[in-house]
Image 1 (cartoon, rainbow, N blue to C red):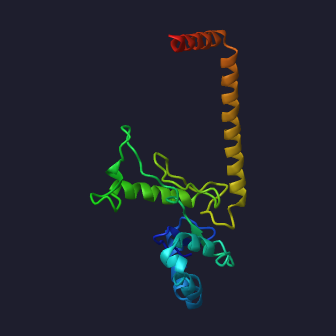
Image 2 (image 1 turned 45 degrees about the horizontal axis):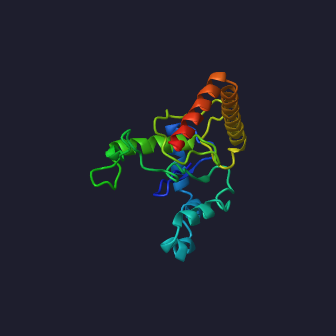
Image 3 (image 1 turned 180 degrees about the horizontal axis):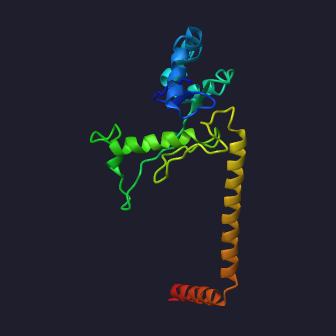
Length: 212
């Protein structure tokens, strides 16, 4: 088992990561003696960093392409997964429509304690979301997620298929329910005599205002 956080929120970890500190420590010690493993899997290729697009363009896209190339999916005890909780992040606003700077340090560049706390929660929750269905913004106001009895591990591309299908099914059901409620409410409004009365008189008032 091996974890490597980076500025791009890329995490390297075991396919079936168990929340067991003792086993985690043993696994790290075992990997530290496997020079070939470390050399092969923890050193990004130099050709990536020397590319013009990486230096002057979109390094995150190139990094995603590298990870999605399945280069790091050849072992059952190792995987590379991007945790995209800041991919589509936007500034948080207060009720008065002003930016909430409480998430930032006084310099307005680094995160404050509040911002770091939210980022940590978002990263943690990303770990327990299937690949392809991970939240791409901060988890503001969301509780911590944990592994379940059915999925007692952190998700990687190799073990996410079933959970992702279930997530898509739940999302489709919620979307269908919302659409049904909107249609039902619209239909009820159209058949409401009082509603017709008010709309009719509103139109008459509007017509009169134009004739004055």
